[in-house]
Each structure stands twice: as C-alpha cells, then as structure tokens.
Image 1 (cartoon, rainbow, N blue to C red):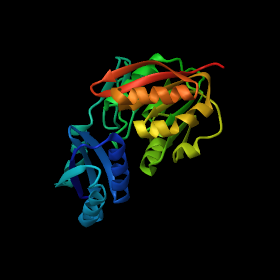
Image 2: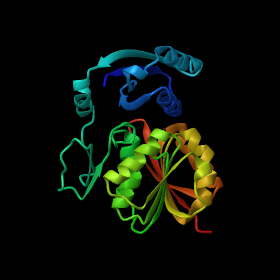
Image 3: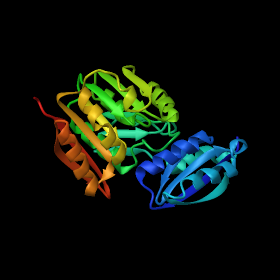
Image 4: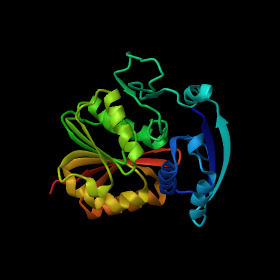
Length: 281
C-alpha cells in the first residue's frame, strides 16, 4: 500500500488549533500523525489523497495561523522502517517502559505499556504526556475510579489501570482516538476501561476519585465546571496541555470558582502540568 507523507510547518499555531486541524485531516483520510519541531507530519494512503481538499482545509484556517506543507511518497517497503525510525521506546522515571508492538519487551521495568502508534500524540513522548505520567506514577490509584478526558491513545488510563485503578472511563471526541483506545486497552490486557466518543456531554453521571485532562487551556476552562460535578470530595485532578503564563493562573482561578484548589505544578520546556484537589465541604 502506497502512502504519502505531508510535512506541516506552522507559524503562531495554538495547541487546540493543531488538535482541530488533525481532526479535520483525519476526515480527509489521514490516519497517522507524528510530532515534529515546528509542526507535525501526517500520513495518508495515496489513493485516498485529495490535495485540492487539503488546500481548501488549510485555507479555512488562514485567518487563524499560517501553514506550509511538503509532500513526499513513502514506499511500501519503507512503511515499518518509517515508524521504527520515528517511534523509539520511552522510559518514565526508571519504572515505566512505553513501547510499540514492534519493540522487544523489557520485563525488568515494573510497568510496561504497549501503544500502537497510529497517532504519536499520546505515546508519552510529548512533554505534557510525560509530566502527566510522572504525576500518575506518584499518585495512589489503587481501587480508584478514574476519568481520562481527551484520552488520545489512552496511555494515561492504561497506566492508571496498571497501578491498580478499579474502574476507568476514557473519553475523546476523535473517532480515531476512540478506536485507538479500544485497541490499546486490549493490547495491554486492560478489561476495566470504558471508552466513549465525545466531549464533556458524554461524561457519565458518576463520581470519580481522580480525573486526568491533558487537552488545552480553552477546552479545560470550558469543562472545569463539569469536572467539579463528577469529582468526589478530596478527589484529585491532573491537568496539562497549556503554558505557565497566563494559562495556569486562568485555570487556577476557574477551578477556585468550583471548589477545586491548586496544589502544585511541573514544567517541561514551555509546557506545564498541574495538580488540583477538590475541597471537602
């Protein structure tokens, strides 16, 4: 099967805008994405590629950001090599080993997660995902009820399951992510995870001990009120997908309106992850 590789570079693009563009590209047939220094690379089956549709899509975003792209053919025999070149195993805090299906297992690590890299957003390589995993590894998740919002590949929910979480709900608005969540749960033999496709409107009316939300500032600000409704007293929220200033202050202020207090934060490069806790009224 012949693929085309589209290499996108951007000026002044926000994280949430990039997420929306990736979703729209998936509607055009692109089925694999990987981060790069100034944007991302997307892959599409050559027979399914419509460059005029791509140009029209980018044109619809012209007032929001500037995008350039280059196209390259990917030969059939190079497809697996392409993934092996761009997806390397990841070690988090010397205890969690994240690998793809084509990497050798490493049983010496206490926790091993296998992620099918259809989309490399959510493999743990991005700073936001790494920081979230560090928070999760330090948390007490045994027998906890967990909600993972904007779950992507479900790597965070899968790690929580390996740490003893009793029940997990993983939600993403992207159908590719929904399918990836189901596949990765099976790969990791996680049988207590419920996947849902949608946004805050599909969050079940159940209470959770812990919420993960690695999305972006604007979506977090819109959804915090709903998180507060389903978070148990003294429950914890771990956020990421935003910057230190002004994002953390805005998120802290919105959380305070709903009885959720700031605890601490991490920073990796320009990205921030933060821990919050619901007050016990």
